[in-house]
Length: 187
Image 1 (tube, rainbow, N blue to C red):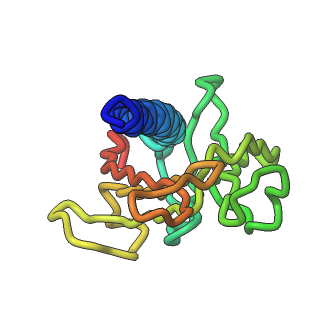
Image 2 (cartoon, rainbow, N blue to C red):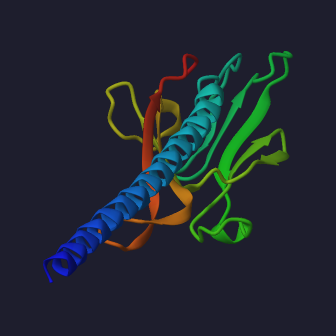
Image 3 (cartoon, rainbow, N blue to C red):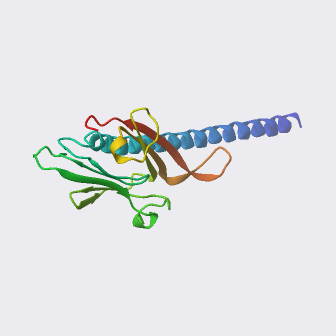
Protein backbone atom coordinates (compact mmCIF):
# COMPACT_ATOMS: atom_id res chain seq x y z
CA UNK A 1 0.00 0.00 0.00
CA UNK A 2 2.89 2.35 0.81
CA UNK A 3 4.47 1.88 -2.59
CA UNK A 4 1.18 2.84 -4.35
CA UNK A 5 1.01 6.06 -2.33
CA UNK A 6 4.67 6.73 -3.14
CA UNK A 7 3.98 6.06 -6.82
CA UNK A 8 0.93 8.38 -6.86
CA UNK A 9 2.83 11.08 -4.97
CA UNK A 10 5.81 10.93 -7.30
CA UNK A 11 3.47 10.96 -10.33
CA UNK A 12 1.74 14.04 -8.94
CA UNK A 13 5.05 15.81 -8.26
CA UNK A 14 6.37 14.79 -11.69
CA UNK A 15 3.20 16.16 -13.32
CA UNK A 16 3.58 19.46 -11.46
CA UNK A 17 7.21 19.75 -12.55
CA UNK A 18 6.20 18.98 -16.15
CA UNK A 19 3.48 21.68 -16.04
CA UNK A 20 5.94 24.20 -14.58
CA UNK A 21 8.45 23.48 -17.37
CA UNK A 22 5.68 23.77 -19.98
CA UNK A 23 4.51 27.09 -18.49
CA UNK A 24 8.12 28.38 -18.45
CA UNK A 25 8.47 27.44 -22.14
CA UNK A 26 5.26 29.32 -23.01
CA UNK A 27 6.40 32.37 -21.03
CA UNK A 28 9.80 32.37 -22.76
CA UNK A 29 8.17 32.15 -26.19
CA UNK A 30 5.73 34.96 -25.34
CA UNK A 31 8.55 37.16 -24.03
CA UNK A 32 10.57 36.60 -27.19
CA UNK A 33 7.59 37.53 -29.39
CA UNK A 34 6.93 40.68 -27.38
CA UNK A 35 10.58 41.66 -27.42
CA UNK A 36 10.89 41.17 -31.19
CA UNK A 37 7.71 43.13 -31.77
CA UNK A 38 8.91 46.01 -29.59
CA UNK A 39 12.23 46.12 -31.44
CA UNK A 40 10.48 46.27 -34.82
CA UNK A 41 8.16 48.99 -33.51
CA UNK A 42 11.08 51.13 -32.35
CA UNK A 43 12.95 50.60 -35.63
CA UNK A 44 9.89 51.69 -37.62
CA UNK A 45 9.45 54.82 -35.49
CA UNK A 46 13.15 55.63 -35.90
CA UNK A 47 12.93 55.20 -39.69
CA UNK A 48 9.98 57.58 -39.93
CA UNK A 49 11.75 60.09 -37.67
CA UNK A 50 14.93 59.97 -39.78
CA UNK A 51 12.96 60.63 -42.99
CA UNK A 52 11.22 63.64 -41.46
CA UNK A 53 14.36 64.92 -39.75
CA UNK A 54 16.37 64.81 -42.99
CA UNK A 55 13.87 66.88 -44.97
CA UNK A 56 12.58 69.23 -42.27
CA UNK A 57 16.09 70.43 -41.43
CA UNK A 58 16.25 71.81 -44.98
CA UNK A 59 13.17 74.04 -44.75
CA UNK A 60 13.99 77.32 -46.46
CA UNK A 61 17.37 76.23 -47.84
CA UNK A 62 18.44 78.78 -50.52
CA UNK A 63 15.04 80.54 -50.38
CA UNK A 64 14.73 84.32 -50.14
CA UNK A 65 11.03 84.55 -49.35
CA UNK A 66 8.81 82.89 -46.78
CA UNK A 67 9.58 79.22 -47.13
CA UNK A 68 6.67 77.76 -45.12
CA UNK A 69 3.52 77.68 -47.22
CA UNK A 70 1.31 75.33 -45.14
CA UNK A 71 1.78 74.68 -41.43
CA UNK A 72 -1.06 72.48 -40.22
CA UNK A 73 -1.21 69.88 -37.45
CA UNK A 74 -1.15 66.93 -39.88
CA UNK A 75 0.28 68.57 -43.02
CA UNK A 76 3.36 70.63 -43.75
CA UNK A 77 4.44 72.21 -47.02
CA UNK A 78 7.56 74.27 -47.61
CA UNK A 79 10.04 75.56 -50.16
CA UNK A 80 13.67 74.49 -50.26
CA UNK A 81 16.42 73.44 -52.61
CA UNK A 82 16.25 69.85 -51.36
CA UNK A 83 18.30 68.23 -54.11
CA UNK A 84 20.82 71.12 -54.33
CA UNK A 85 20.37 71.65 -58.05
CA UNK A 86 19.77 75.41 -57.82
CA UNK A 87 15.99 75.13 -58.35
CA UNK A 88 13.57 75.82 -55.51
CA UNK A 89 11.53 72.70 -54.76
CA UNK A 90 8.11 72.24 -53.16
CA UNK A 91 8.03 69.54 -50.50
CA UNK A 92 4.94 68.44 -48.65
CA UNK A 93 4.24 65.83 -45.99
CA UNK A 94 0.69 64.63 -45.42
CA UNK A 95 -1.01 61.42 -44.36
CA UNK A 96 -3.58 59.09 -45.85
CA UNK A 97 -6.72 57.87 -44.20
CA UNK A 98 -6.92 54.40 -42.70
CA UNK A 99 -8.62 52.97 -45.82
CA UNK A 100 -5.40 53.42 -47.86
CA UNK A 101 -3.64 50.60 -45.96
CA UNK A 102 -5.68 47.42 -46.50
CA UNK A 103 -2.58 45.19 -46.46
CA UNK A 104 -2.03 45.28 -42.69
CA UNK A 105 -4.12 43.74 -39.94
CA UNK A 106 -4.09 46.94 -37.89
CA UNK A 107 -7.14 49.04 -38.86
CA UNK A 108 -5.47 52.24 -37.57
CA UNK A 109 -2.49 52.29 -39.96
CA UNK A 110 -1.93 55.33 -42.17
CA UNK A 111 0.70 56.20 -44.78
CA UNK A 112 2.99 59.23 -44.62
CA UNK A 113 3.15 60.76 -48.09
CA UNK A 114 6.14 62.79 -49.25
CA UNK A 115 5.11 64.97 -52.18
CA UNK A 116 8.18 66.35 -53.95
CA UNK A 117 7.39 68.90 -56.70
CA UNK A 118 4.00 67.29 -57.26
CA UNK A 119 5.26 63.69 -57.38
CA UNK A 120 3.72 61.65 -54.58
CA UNK A 121 5.95 59.11 -52.89
CA UNK A 122 4.20 56.93 -50.35
CA UNK A 123 5.99 54.06 -48.77
CA UNK A 124 4.75 51.38 -46.44
CA UNK A 125 2.81 52.37 -43.36
CA UNK A 126 5.51 51.19 -40.92
CA UNK A 127 2.75 51.09 -38.31
CA UNK A 128 2.19 54.87 -38.28
CA UNK A 129 -1.22 55.59 -36.76
CA UNK A 130 -1.00 59.32 -36.04
CA UNK A 131 1.31 62.24 -36.73
CA UNK A 132 1.11 65.74 -35.35
CA UNK A 133 3.12 68.79 -36.34
CA UNK A 134 3.27 71.83 -34.08
CA UNK A 135 5.21 75.00 -34.65
CA UNK A 136 7.17 77.15 -32.24
CA UNK A 137 8.53 80.69 -32.47
CA UNK A 138 11.95 81.86 -31.30
CA UNK A 139 10.71 81.88 -27.67
CA UNK A 140 9.48 78.25 -27.84
CA UNK A 141 5.86 79.33 -27.79
CA UNK A 142 3.28 77.77 -30.11
CA UNK A 143 2.54 79.82 -33.19
CA UNK A 144 0.47 79.57 -36.36
CA UNK A 145 2.00 82.61 -38.07
CA UNK A 146 4.12 81.27 -40.94
CA UNK A 147 6.76 84.02 -40.72
CA UNK A 148 7.41 83.44 -37.02
CA UNK A 149 8.02 79.67 -37.16
CA UNK A 150 11.52 78.77 -35.96
CA UNK A 151 11.05 75.21 -34.68
CA UNK A 152 8.96 72.27 -35.89
CA UNK A 153 7.86 69.73 -33.30
CA UNK A 154 6.83 66.38 -34.72
CA UNK A 155 5.03 63.68 -32.76
CA UNK A 156 4.63 60.15 -34.13
CA UNK A 157 2.42 57.36 -32.81
CA UNK A 158 3.32 53.92 -34.13
CA UNK A 159 1.53 50.63 -33.47
CA UNK A 160 2.50 47.05 -34.17
CA UNK A 161 1.09 45.12 -37.11
CA UNK A 162 -0.39 42.31 -35.02
CA UNK A 163 -2.19 42.17 -31.72
CA UNK A 164 -0.36 40.60 -28.81
CA UNK A 165 -1.71 39.41 -25.50
CA UNK A 166 -0.94 41.77 -22.62
CA UNK A 167 -0.34 40.69 -19.01
CA UNK A 168 -4.08 40.76 -18.32
CA UNK A 169 -4.85 38.37 -21.18
CA UNK A 170 -6.35 41.08 -23.39
CA UNK A 171 -5.33 41.30 -27.06
CA UNK A 172 -4.01 44.74 -28.07
CA UNK A 173 -1.57 46.46 -30.40
CA UNK A 174 1.75 47.53 -28.95
CA UNK A 175 2.35 51.29 -29.10
CA UNK A 176 5.33 53.55 -29.22
CA UNK A 177 5.60 57.32 -29.29
CA UNK A 178 8.39 59.41 -30.80
CA UNK A 179 8.76 63.16 -30.42
CA UNK A 180 11.37 65.44 -31.89
CA UNK A 181 11.86 69.18 -32.23
CA UNK A 182 13.68 70.30 -35.35
CA UNK A 183 15.40 73.63 -35.77
CA UNK A 184 15.71 74.30 -39.52
CA UNK A 185 18.79 76.51 -39.94
CA UNK A 186 17.24 78.64 -42.68
CA UNK A 187 14.08 79.83 -40.88
